[in-house]
Length: 511
Image 1: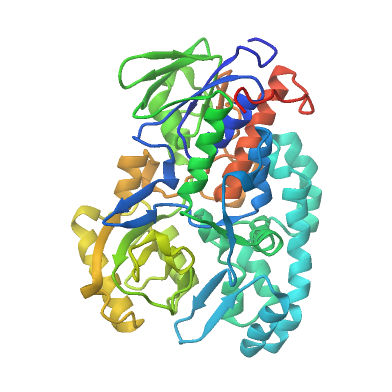
Image 2: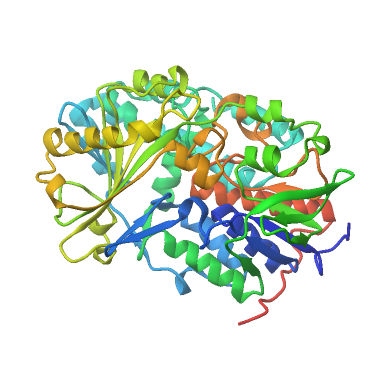
C-alpha cells in the first residue's frame, strides 16, 4: 500500500452523515474518493420525503455540537455559514408527562431550576452539581478528542482510570437518580441514550455527555430541514473534486489475501480501490458484502450475536391544520419508563402503552408545509426484528392506535380529518430499504460491553485497507457521534499510512 495519500483510490460505501463526512475528509487529504449510494439521492438515514407540498426529514431531526459540523467544513477549507442557515431552538424540547405536567427542557440553568423545583426543590438545588459532573465526561470525550480517536485496547486502558473516577461506566439512569429524586427530573436527564438506540438503564453514563453537549453547543435546526446539511456536505465534496455515484449499490467488497481490492456493484462493474470505507450497516458490511473465507474475527456468528439496539415506528404526517401546543421537538410520555424500555429491549414485545417523540419543523420553518399546515413526524420506540411482529399486518392498526391517542387523549383536535399525507416506516423498512440487520434504526446497542474498544473498530481487524464509519462503530450513533466516527476513521487511516495529522491538507480543487 502506498504510504501517502496522493493517487490513492478510496471507495466510500453509503452516503449517510458518516460516509459523506469521511469522503470530505479523505478527499481534502489528497485521496481520490468515489462515494457510492444505493438510492437515487444521497443521505442514508437522513433521507428526505417530499409529498403534496410537505417536506419531511426521514431520520435525524436536530443538530447538536455545531462545532463538530464546522470541523467537517473546515477540513475542506470551507465554513458552515456559507452553506447552512442554522436556527437556535429554545427550549430544546417540550416534555409532556403522563399526569399532564410539562417541562420545557432548555439550556438556561435558572429556567431549568425553576421548573425542576416545582417537581422537587432538592432536585433543583442539585442541578449545578449534575452539570459539573457531566461536563467532565464531555471534556474527556469531546475536548480531549477521545470520541475522534480510534479506540483500541491501549486507548481504553489509558481512559479507564478516568472513566472509573467519573463513574462513567455505571448505567446512565443509575447515576442520574443519585442527583434527582422526582421521576420527571430523572427522565429529563437520562433519556438521551434512547436518541442513539440505547437503554438508559444499561447504557454507560459516558453517554450523559449528550445533555452537556446540548447545553454547551445548543440544539439547532437548519432552514429547509436536516436534508439541507446532507446537500451542503454533498456540495462541498463535489467542489473539492470528489465523485458521487447514486443508484449504485455495493454487492461485494472484493478482498484478496485479506486485503481490499475494490468494490463490485449490483450493475456488475468493479471499482478498484486502495482503501474502502463502509458507511453501510456494520452487519451488512461484514455478513453480506465480504466472503466468509476472508473473515476470522467477524464471522457470521460473531456479528449476529452482538446486541443490537431498538427500532422505531415512524409516521410522516402532513396536516392541513396547526397545533401550537407542539414545539419543534416534543416528547409525550407513558406512565411507565423502566418497564416500557424493558419490554422493548429485553422482552422484545410490542407494549400496549407507548411513549413518542414528535418532530414538527414547521414550528420553526413554515416552508416545510403549505401555508397554515403542519409537517410532522412521530417516532415511537419499538423492538427490533428479534421480536415476533409481522409489521405488514400490524402497521395500519398500530398507526390508527397512535392517531386515536393523539386526537382523543392528547388533544390534537380533528387530526384525522385534516390528514393530507400519512406515510409509515417500520422496522421491516429499516431492514429492506436500509440494509439494517434486525431492522434496528441505529445499530449495535450502546451498552458497557459494546462501548469504546468493545465496540466494532473503525479499522477492520480482518482485512487490510477496510475501514468503517457510522452508528455501530466508535464513538457511536447520533449526528455528532457519527461525524466523529469519520474523524476517528480518518485518523486510523493516517496512522496506518504514516501521515502526520498536522500535515497540511490539499487546497480544494475547485474554489
